[in-house]
Amino acid sequence: MRHRIASPDSLHSRGLIRLRLYKARERQRLIDPADLEVTYFAVDPETKPVFEHDRVMVWVSDPDHCRVERRDRGRDLHLVESGTNVLPRARGLGILRAPGVDYRWVRSLNWRWGAGEYLDRDQVEAIVDRALDMEPWAVPGGRLASCICPT
Image 1 (tube, rainbow, N blue to C red):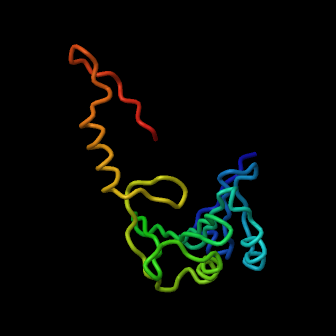
Image 2 (cartoon, one colour):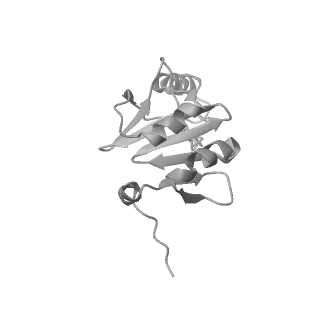
């Protein structure tokens, strides 16, 4: 028997919240809004948890902090408050409870480091420029070896 994962729109219409655990044996589950607070604060940040509700994703990054993202019309956005995108963990719970409020969404950078984190494009370009200056992959005779780049 095949299991279908419900689309985000159908989850929203049923009021369910999806929890994804990127570093745990149990990879995802659906949470009833009545159980959200208990589950949200009980989840271990080491499992890289992400709560999804109405196109809003809350990444719990450590015991006290979270990052909030949204996917809207093909654009990745992140929430900025008080000049930062690292928010108190309790704030993430409030946003999950009211995902439709008009928050201050900012377009996210294209360079992803990992779950809920980004690299600054200028930093990446500076590192690449420095690597090109050093030419560590050049070999005698002018032939180039394959570049093994970290992903």
